[in-house]
Image 1 (cartoon, rainbow, N blue to C red):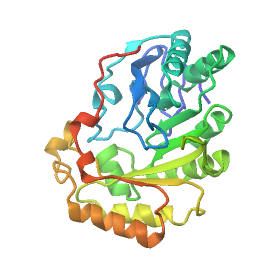
Image 2: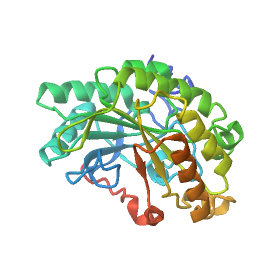
Image 3: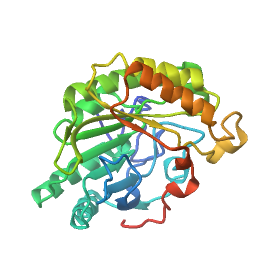
Image 4: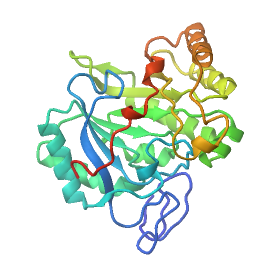
Length: 297
């Protein structure tokens, strides 16, 4: 699936020779990480009171114009390290009391990450591994992560090809995401929580409601309702804040309205998607985005 001279790791399958130049995702031949620290703003079953040991990787196969992590996903911010240092980071987060290891947008570094997980496990890593993804994943990637990933924390951003092309430069987003999600569900099985309420295994499907995109949010929920009941935990987010190019892109240049989010919640309740998480509108704040200051790297 991966050759450094012909990369096929993500659905772009750009074929970049990453020994010479970066791929479509912005990643070259040297592992790059932007932050590694306890994170307290994920779903309660991920962060809880202990915090999630979160590692933010540089680069991304999507091109979301509203990305809150755009400095690392699209502008290359990060520090070059190797898989040996990455395995140290995993163990350092465990020593800090992290509830899990939360790997954010790591697909473009998959071979480095699995090597680091192997090394860290040989040295005592025992935390559940969370793969925190925008949902634009190949079935081959999901299969390659069997035995490495315990929890899939996966966005389902769009149904509409028009919106996914316009806002994330990925017209095939839903076609790809749907197959990946079904592979994740088959691999992880039904959600399993420990005695403290932390998710040990399973799938969380997130949807971020975007301003002016109500009909597509409702379509995403309608699709979620076709999946086996109880096979995943839904997480409906109202935290959208205009970041990056969205500040000059209508209607993304505003936060969602209370009316829009209420319509999303009403549809979720109507469909029985209530065994999960919903956000307060107060979650739409820039301060919930962590500083990318290379902490912990």
